[in-house]
Amino acid sequence: MKILALELSSARGSLALLNDGDVAFDRKWQNDRKNSGPFFEYLAEVQSKSGKPDIIIVGLGPGSYAGTRIAISAAIGLQAASQTRLIGFPSICAIECEADEYCVIGDARRQAFFFARVRDNRLIEDPTLMPEAELRENLDKVDRKMSIFATEKLSQFAGAKIRYPSAKLLARFASDSNRSFTQPPLEPIYLREPHITVPKR
Image (cartoon, rainbow, N blue to C red):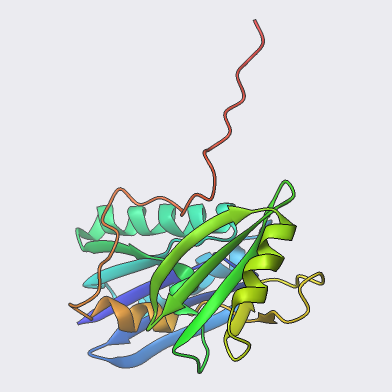
């Protein structure tokens, strides 16, 4: 079984292909949100080498909304052309680390942050929005041995270590029948309601 995984939710993009459990393709790069060129170059390369995948899995964030939308759009296009199975999974559950359980924090902009908890690569506490003061209170309650990760530098939270989601991990999860996946239509994990600008009359 060939499993293609796409992950663009953070500053490090990744793309991986597993063929019967073996890593056939694995690329990581600095993910510039204004330039998707490397992603599409690697996607073309893996397609030319491996052909049609049996499953496509996409990281759904939370994180870069633009990056996640690009990955989802590319996956939808591939799925439409190949009629393969398409699924999504939270990116923050596929962070490369040694810890079985960890917390993830992130800047949600507009003076808000998010907090989530992951155990065995599953969300046990969904991403929740909160102001900085409340996040500090939450982190103070966390066991000091607990790993706290962020996918970008948050200087105001010195204890948070930068770690990135991995397409290779996503691909491994896709073959696990005991996991729950998001089915199409896929959307990024929204931390707040989408903002719609209403035109002036």
